[in-house]
Amino acid sequence: MDYDLIIVRYGEIGVKSPKVRRRFENKLISNIKRKLNCKITINQGRIFLYPENFDDAYDTLHKTMGVVSFSPAVSTETDFDIIEETINKYVQNLISEGLFSPENSFAIRCRRVGTHEFSSHKMAGFCGSVVVKATGAPVDLSNPDLALFVEVRDNKTYIYHEKIQGVGGLPVGTQGKVVALVSGGIDSPVAAFLMLKRGVEVIVLHFNNYPYTGGSNEKVLKIIEKLEEYSPSKIKFYEAGYGEYLKKCIEDAPIRLTCVLCKSGMYKIAEQIAKKEGALAIVDGSSLGQVASQTLPNILATRYPTAMPVLSPLIGLDKLEIEEIGKKIGTLDISILPAGGCTAVPRYPETNADLDHVLEVLEEINFEDEVEKVVSSIKSKES
Image 1 (cartoon, rainbow, N blue to C red):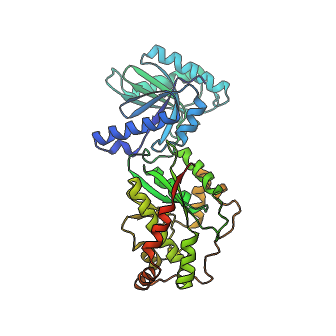
Image 2 (image 1 turned 45 degrees about the horizontal axis):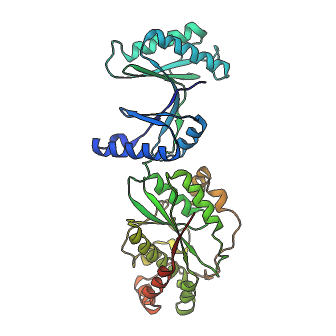
Image 3 (image 1 turned 135 degrees about the vertical axis):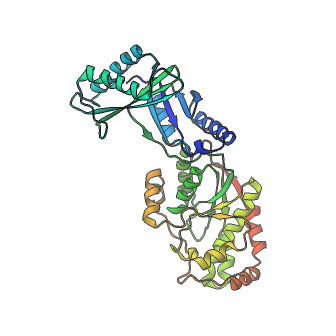
């Protein structure tokens, strides 16, 4: 099929106020252009994209936050004779490509924007008669084998037969910045993806627990590379050397509290990075009750010392639901690559931490000073 353009649709952007809608539309167009060198126009809620390479465009639009669906289309003039000629050619191409046959049923779905001397119903009936005349195919308005879409917009008419699903959400960059805690595991990359989908710019913070883990950040770099497929720009990446802090917790605090103190430190350090980057929240992959640090008492205790909001988009999902998203976005295969666990985890970790006791222990280990030591050594890295 020789397409002229791709029609791009957004969803919830359309319910924003006119001023906000224009800003979001402009950001969506800007994000597409960062990935794709092509002409883009917009008209009454539709984005029209004219790519040099349609395959590249499909790949980009599939992974652009804010795109709900898109359709490769053929454009023509809003003239009945020209529309008839275009539909005839379009249907013949579908038949030659094995996408339609005269034995298949079809329906015309017509949408009209602007002032015309005909109704959408009349245009649909005309286009349907063209297909019947050319192929003899039966009409089935309820459950057709093929839906042929005819979109009339002023003096231009667009014809297409498929709506390709996009990722949806809001354009990245419309909702500010967050610092996402990303490990090499399954959950945190999915959490970062979901925040990208809500339009935030994600800054990754990874904690290297060496010598309690292997110390390699190879998996994290691969995960960031995968997440960047959904981001209009490279994702900034910070790595924190966390081994000395963990050693302090293990040696100078009750061993059952190691995981609680570990998570408390992560949030506090993330808060400092967020302030430096102008980010307004911290994101993690917590799922309620999944591991010791994610029970409600422990969530309270670990987040209490941190003033900045901590967002947990996976909080109500179970492991299978999280894995399904990871599989869909391509992070799961990376996350399940072999890697040793953290040897700092105690045999019997605390699952019902007492907040007052945790605060006392934090003071005993000079929590603020230990956090500052980690923060002072953190540097941003290239993903």
